[in-house]
Amino acid sequence: MLRKLRIILEMIKIEHTLFAMPFLYSGAILAAQGLPDAWTLFWITLGLFSARTAAMCLNRLIDREIDAKNPRTADRALPQGLVSPREVWAIVAISLALLLLAAAMLNPLCVKLYPLAVAIIWGYPYMKRFTWLSHLVLGSALAIAPFGAWVAVRASIDLPALLLAAAVIFWVAGFDIIYATQDVEFDRREGLFSIPARFGIANALKISTLFHGATLLFLLLLYFFSPLGRIYLFGFVIMSALLAYEHAIVKPENLKKVGVAFFNINVLFSICLFTFITLDVFI
Image (spheres, rainbow, N blue to C red):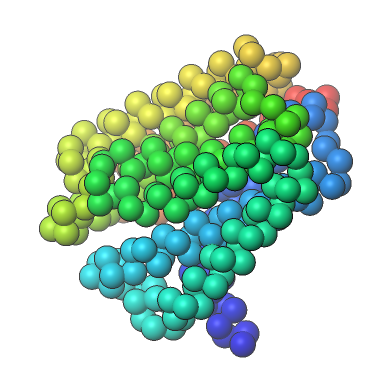
């Protein structure tokens, strides 16, 4: 039982929740202009874990045949038969039910937006079969966290929530392009769509840079269209430096540091955003 649990936790990459949690709480604290009540914090946290678990399980289920062909992903749980599709579908059903419960416990607008959230996380795995814009759909899936947290607190859709969500969309799309450089040859051979496979690695890295430039633009606009002040602006400078470093260490001729760029730097980026929004709001 414990072994199966470890396999499932590895399959859903529970540690990668570090990407989403700071954005979730950033959206909540910014919306509340302080710490939201314990009820809201509990349900948005449950909603995050439920949505992310459903998204990862759906991605693994829908892509299991593709993963089995790719040397980089062939050792994943489903291709290896370490967990059955029926078991993973059961986790999806439970996760989506918990997500709906969390929405219902928050406010009616969260319930109304629930089908859109499900459509995004369910639709993303299919996108690489049709369009190289799939990276932006992945970004939209993660942007649900800060946007949903804002809606949970305020029961409304406001400009700061849209700006924060847009920043996350382009941030995720930018680093997902970097990550996808590892699979260019495989994607082309299998007829899968990605920006690196479509435009080549060198051009893809340039597009990734443009996307991260858009991220910084939306984060700067957030400063002007929210109560955030100088502390946040100082954090903005640090986040800009982190993204610049991310692009400095990944070159078309040297992709050895893709892992560092993908995980380490982006975790620091999300933590920085949360830290400086929180300090600005409370100080």
